[in-house]
Image (cartoon, rainbow, N blue to C red; front, side, top):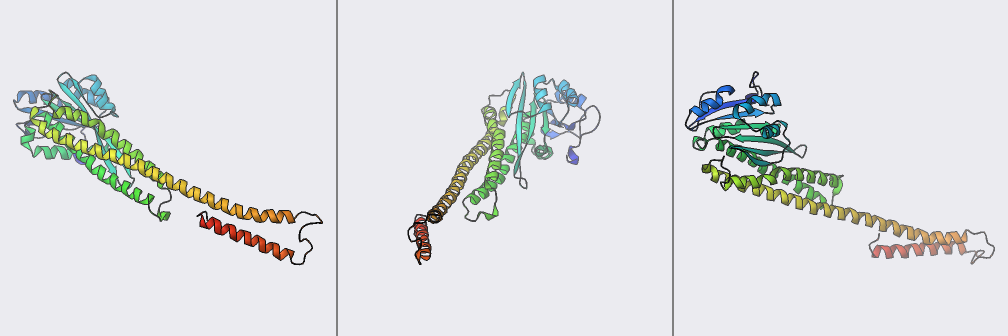
Amino acid sequence: MSRDEQSTDGPDSGIVDCALYIDGVRQGGRVPLDIALETAQEAEDGFVWIGLHEPTAGQFDAVAAEFGLHPLAVEDAVHAHQRAKLEIYGDIAFAVLKTVRYVDPEEVIEVGEVMVFLGAKFAVTVRHGQAASLTGVRRRLETAPDVLRTGPSAVFYAVADHIVDGYILAAEGLGNEIDAAEFLVFDTDRSREDNVTERLYKLKREVLEFRRAVSPLAEPLGRVARGEIAAIDPRTKDYFRDVEDHVIRAAERVDGFAELLTGTLSANTAQIQSRENADMRKITAWVAILSANTLIVGIYGQNFDFMPELHWRYGYPIMLTVMLGISVFMYRGFKRNHWL
């Protein structure tokens, strides 16, 4: 947690920031939680934005009581691990957004969550996971008073836009790793990568995790962009339409990753089977060559008195020559048919 995000002790422990905005401008510093909503209601164009980071149930109780948040939404906000969604509880909207960050050294997708409560005079954001810092979002939004004048909806837009931008960055990093893995599958020099299959399956698992975070978000953002949510200021529809477009593009790219990895895995499996079949053909060919000679040696190894050329002076070298000739003949035949 950065220094700016450290919570203070006391009744509002767990709160990162609590600020009052009037006519798109922040008023002073941090506002005490117990008078935040009352202060916002006294201002005609004011609202309060409270940000929390991984609060416990006890820490969140004061916020829930102050703003009249629904118990089911409060439970989701405290315990996290929810799918992306948008729900309406009376005149309060509750949204769950999944954050995504690609960690390059480990080649993994790191998923976090941000919950947003929107009322007429307040916005409450609850952050889970280190990949979901909103301090920069607040600072950037405070430099755009025209957007902030739309009220709590501006907070939802800024948070959603920041998270969706993270999808694009994560997709770039993951896409580079998938391209590298695909190259290794079709590279003739495989000595640089001992287990391409394991890497491909790992990337496929990360893509599925990415898809679960991104795909469900398109539908609720579409509802917001179409003005179907009364709790969202209609002046922000154009902003949300842009965010929705970016989400759809990110979801389509992730779907493309999944299809590409499926095809690459199939190609890799086919190559492995082809190599195994080639090895089996080589083994079979050598066994056949040795079997022909073993048959001759086996016959002449029997202790019978009467056998062809048994007592002939040149019988032994002639049989060795015959065995060598058979071996050379079979070897050339297998070589011509690409078994060796």
